[in-house]
Length: 156
Picture: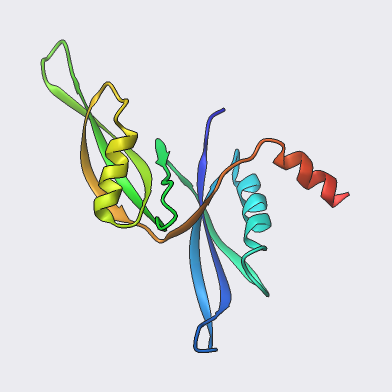
């Protein structure tokens, strides 16, 4: 199954620790087949985390080659990594780089680099980490097999 990721943004009112209500914008990744399905799945997931009204403000396709999660319970940040795979053009003898974007979950930047290297350890190709930046992504919602049929049954 081909994984397609969508970056979904939501705006809602959140109760702060000091008791004030503040308008909050958050970004999530959703695994879906289309924009329509991404929105439907995102709304179903986000309803559990918000109280009151919310608005889905943006959905865009995220071109990700790989997603590396962490088993560390303290890892709560997502980092966007640009990885350049290095190949040698046999005819010209020149190095060719193809850049792919990957997401890495980690506690901090150092751990993100370690998690990326661990995830890439089975790769036969040479690669260089071109950049790693922290994102505002709060969480990732994976597609679950049988999820669609369960959603349809509860709607009936």
